[in-house]
Every structure is written in C-alpha cells, then in structure tokens.
Length: 103
Image 1 (cartoon, rainbow, N blue to C red):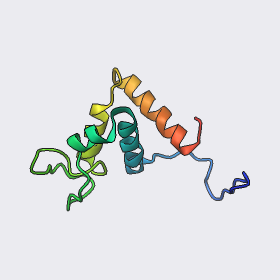
Image 2 (image 1 turned 180 degrees about the horizontal axis):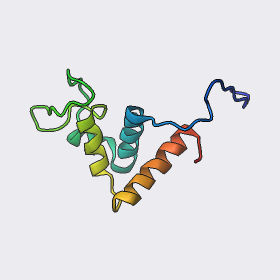
Image 3 (image 1 turned 45 degrees about the vertical axis):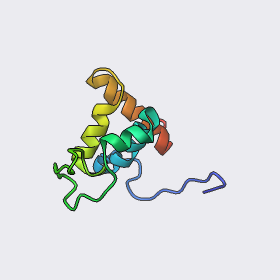
Image 4 (image 1 turned 135 degrees about the vertical axis):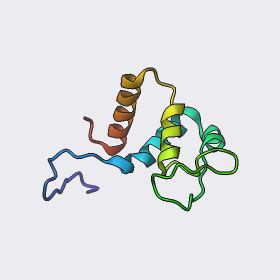
C-alpha cells in the first residue's frame, strides 16, 4: 500500500518463472541503455497479427514489437553486455530492481 504495508496470499513465497512477462521489462532496459530512437529503428511497436512466438518480421526486416519472441530476442542481442552469463545477470538485476524484489 502507499503506507508501506504488504499483503500476500497463496503460494506467494514460491519462486516461479515470469516467462513472457519479462518482455516489457527487457524492452525498458533496452530503451534505458540504448535510447528510444535506436530501439525504434531496430524493433517496431506495431501489432504483429500473430502469436507471441511469431518470427514474422515487418517489411523492413525488423520484429513488429518487443512483445513477440523475435522482438525480445532482438532486444537481448542489442544490450551492450558481455558474455551470456554477464548478459543474464545484468538482465536479472535490472528486472529485480524494477520489481522491487532486490534478489
């Protein structure tokens, strides 16, 4: 709440995978590191007309948006991090900070 109280129910302490819910956070991270203008040149913001796992590209050869798998993969590839483990860790840290989990 705005007064700092936390409410929870059910299996709230069980860890789980956020899967496609990570895509908006990933896009936010790409914009933060690379800027909105560059991201607009690399990943579109239009509906794809397909499923989340679509690999379809627009007429310019870029993913329709960051919320389909092709767009999320493009975002990860554009982030200026090192090897796979460092890239994963930087994404994990950023998403944890956005979610206030701190873990």
